[in-house]
Image 1 (cartoon, rainbow, N blue to C red):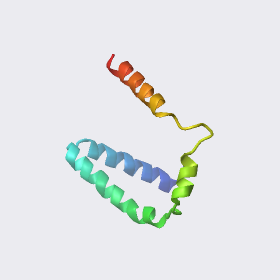
Image 2 (cartoon, helix red, strand yellow; image 1 turned 30 degrees about the vertical axis):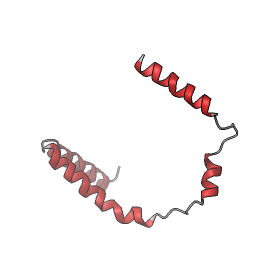
Image 3 (cartoon, rainbow, N blue to C red; image 1 turned 90 degrees about the vertical axis):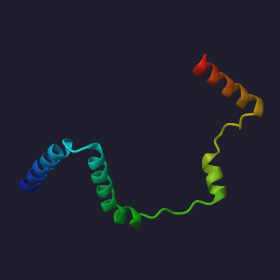
Image 4 (cartoon, rainbow, N blue to C red; image 1 turned 180 degrees about the vertical axis):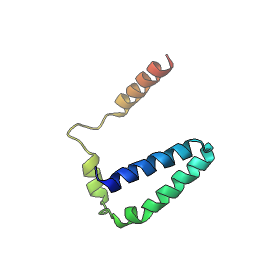
Length: 84
């Protein structure tokens, strides 16, 4: 490990120790501020738009869509398991 990396790791540990003693709202504000520093990087990463037809193709599988009766049975089975 380089000296700079070791110093960064030490600073990280020091900051974490300080922050541990803060209130939860103070820690939450810090996290929000840290996330804001990532916005410019995230905004630079653009995604290619997906057309409706492409999305439909992505979601479609090699299996047939369930019938209404099958969906009702699956929902009933799930609720029976969940609520007995």
